[in-house]
Image (cartoon, rainbow, N blue to C red; front, side, top):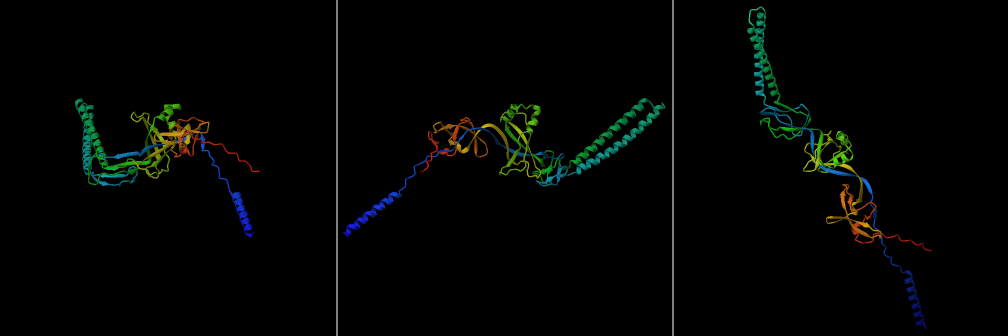
Length: 379
């Protein structure tokens, strides 16, 4: 009897545990499909940064060469030194020039004395002729000698001035204010007018020459710019930024100051000169870098770069069809330069819906949009 009761108790306990476990069980969550992020393609305006390779050049870069031959006696500047206009740069041996000047001055004195004697002779014959003491032949002869003496004085004076100029050439001064370039000569070298001594770069303003496509001319034609209005057109062009090779951006902005009127046959480009102020002298002739100018593109289709899938030499986007499935579309793109967007130049139309985030995970015919599930309220 007791065993039977114990058995009944165990049966009831086991049954209770079974009911408890059944009541604590939970339903596994059903898989839920989520939609991919999409966008509708629209046309908009955007500014594109165009980059051009450039090399800086001073506004007044002057090559310094001597005007006379001789031995270089003194170098008064150093490479990279800032100089002012008229400052002495080099001194050439001037001893021969001084001797030639002294000789020319002596010849001038002799010519002046000869002129004075010829003048006295002419005036004397003129008085005698008036008294009918000498003939007209004597008067004309003395007059001619006086004119010859005057001409000799003029020649001697010109020789003196020429010798002074030659002497002045022995001291070479800076024709413009700027920075001294390399100095390939040394004191004691024999120099001549063919010898390049250095270059003075007038660096108060620097020019960067860049080559741009002739599309600028096409824009000018579209805008109806006349030849007489080119300067006004240039003045409206955007400011330019100069970026050095190490990536440093020059703090002062530049402006386009000139545009050549001839397209290069070989490159199909125009030469544009961009002026940059250089108040601190941080720019030097010969510095290479990149000139960046932003031009407005109107009415273009812009999409995020992650919406474009690269397949070897193709670019594709996934267009969403009416049945919410995706189909791959070949497109051509243009880089905007901002690191996040592309301009679609062909392959899409305004109003098309495309997959953006997750485009790399989409396959042809895959459903990418799912309707939102209705949430039923519990009663």
